[in-house]
Structure formats: structure tokens, C-alpha cells
Length: 107
Length: 120
Image 1 (cartoon, rainbow over the protein chains, first blue to last red):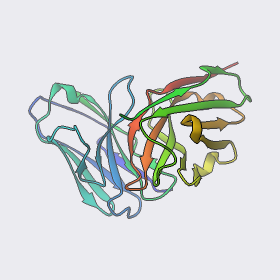
Image 2: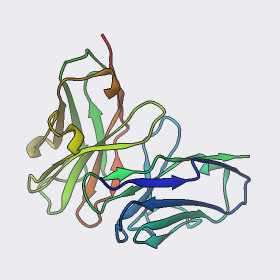
Image 3: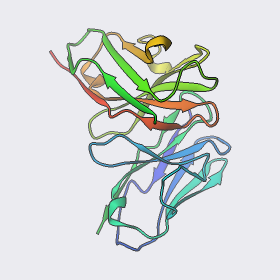
Image 4: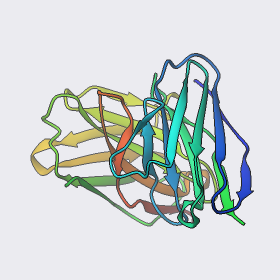
């Protein structure tokens, strides 16, 4: 199985901050990397796919980059509604695997 | 628009078989490239992919659970059914179904999830 490792596991930031979450794959996954946002008690929501493509309706303050094994999710200007847990997921090969999640708290 | 909804028991006993149904609308599992997957999330833990089925009946399973899982599609009724045998308390989780397609294999639409508790 391809292991996905996210860092940090949690972070706290202020409104307006630039926030970066990283995700590392245990082997190359090309650009088959997706990011999800999950708010408490809700289903995950797709934010970005194939590393950098913004899902329809997702605010442009979210962006993604990377290829191979190292990827980043960036929120350019943090908003209160961004408080959530963020997961990366590789869709390069089954079994599809998710990172352990990054819990983002707004100060 | 695309919607999915999971249904099934909220409580099962250890060793029993769990049967979950995903009823969807807004797409067809007859359409080339379309798939439906199942993902679960134990309370307070990360997401875990379980299985998926594609329009052409291609099926994929999580290897560690493959002996316990079966996924089938009912195209006429727009449903996907997941069965998991020999349930154990560690299988307690919220189970989600989600839409995917071979254009990128990401899960772009999710059901609301259903919490299944395994307890005697």
C-alpha cells in the first residue's frame, strides 16, 4: 500500500494567515493527489484534485501543488469557515489511501 | 445534481454481516468511467477506503478486508450494495459512499454517511 503522511497533524492560525499543509507519499504517485476538507460531523468535501485543480465552487484561496511524492495545500488568506480537518488522498493505485489528517484551528 | 445516501443498520452484533446500500441520483452506473466507492471513518480517526465498483463491473477491494467485503451494483435501481462479514467492534465507524470516475479517480460527491456500531 502507498502510505500518505501529512504534516503537521494540527495547527492553529489566525484569520488572514497563509497556511500550508504538506503531504508525502511513500512512492511516486505522479499527480494523483486529492485534497478534502471535513468539518465536524460532516462528510468530506473535495477541494482539489490531480494535485492542483480546484473543484468547482471551491474558493480560490485554496491552491495545491506538487508531483511525485511531495505535495502541498495552501490557504492564502485563512477565513473562519476554514476551520476543519484536511485530508490528502492518493488515487494513483488501489488501495486508495488517505493521510492521517491535519486539524486546522482558527485562533 | 448528484446525490448519494447510505442506508442500513445502525447497530450490528459481533460476527454478524453488515449490509449497506448506497442509493444515488444524478448519474448512472451505465455511463462509461463512472464508479461508486465506499469509505469509512472510525470515530475520531482518519478516512479508510474500502471498495469500489465501476460501470463495467470492475471491482476493487482493500486487500486487508477483501475476504470480508462484497460490492455489487443494481443499475436499474441506482444502488450499490456493500456487505461486510464477521463484523467486529473495531469496524464501528461512519460509512460513506461516494461518486468517482476514471478521469481522475477522486471522490467528488459524497453521501452524508451512516454510523454503524458493532456491539453485543
